[in-house]
Amino acid sequence: TFSNNRCNFYPTTNRYVPSLKGESDSIGGKCTRTVPKPTWICNSNNFCIATIDGSDDKQITEWTSQADISIVFVGQFAKEGSDRSDLKFDLNEISGDCQFPQPNADDMITLVAKSSKKTIVAATSPGAALTPWRDVVQGLIFSFIPGQAYGDAITDIIFNKVNPTARLSITLPISENDQNFSKSQYPGIDLIGEYTEGMYIDYRWYTKNNITPAFSFGHGLSYTKFLYSDININNDKKIITFVVKNVGKVAGAEVAQLYLGFPDEADTPPIQLKGFQKTEILEPGQIETITFALSDIDVSIWDITTHSWRMVHGKYIVSIGASITDIRHNGSLTII
Image (cartoon, rainbow, N blue to C red; front, top):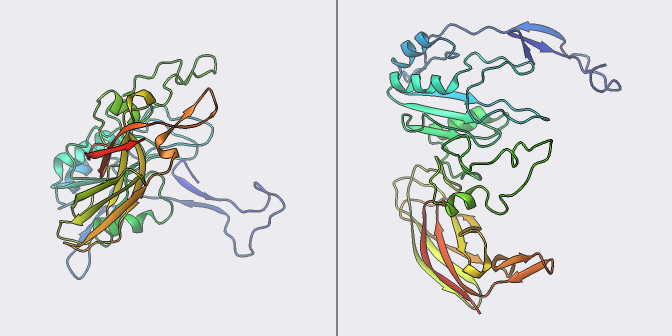
């Protein structure tokens, strides 16, 4: 843990579980944490890297202006038993044992983008976050809570050892309260929250209200491009097939997504995710046929009167694509 710019090692014995004993070679005590002075470190291929902590605006401008690419690592603080006060990357308070050298991270990113030739942001967050600098940076790697191998993963993506295929499982909003939640909804009044939004949460709210977010549900970029074609819909078996082709210049995989628009009588959100499938790694020009077999539940709604699933008959709009804002209305499915 970090406190007052010092890192503390705690022995296992007599801390949280008194019955456990530390290994004979375990380390206890304290160590001093210092930030090294920035300097260019180069390898035999004349590839050079320098590291700064982002605490000094003048230093940021000086060093990023020398770089071909600047990679900015930012994160949001969260802990069990409390909610974040906002969705910003600005950390203006000391939380627990953690101290942040650059609390105004959003301002820092903007400053880096002004002085650097290219800027990539590597962001970690326990949930949704604001990205006011998204139009002035060249790349954003959004990693939620990545774990201990984060450094290796970022390196593999940036240097194209791995072609990324991940997709957002939530929507990244434009403003702090895109959905206009009332105080009674969140955080609640007298410790009571009212869930009056019903089914219209995340992308279901955005599509219902025709609002474009900062980054949509299902979104994610790749180093290559894919083309969707040859959709076929079998009404009797509720099977949907289509072809995905790598039309880019490097190998990669695609995460194809299937959305359904229910008949009006269903009184449901206008469009709903009903399936997603990752292709194999496709070489340039290579194709793969994707098949989605819908179940009865996929074309049903929950009947609050009978407390059971009820199939909705009628015409469904079938859409496929790479995200909720990159879908194509490719046909219809009729449930008789």
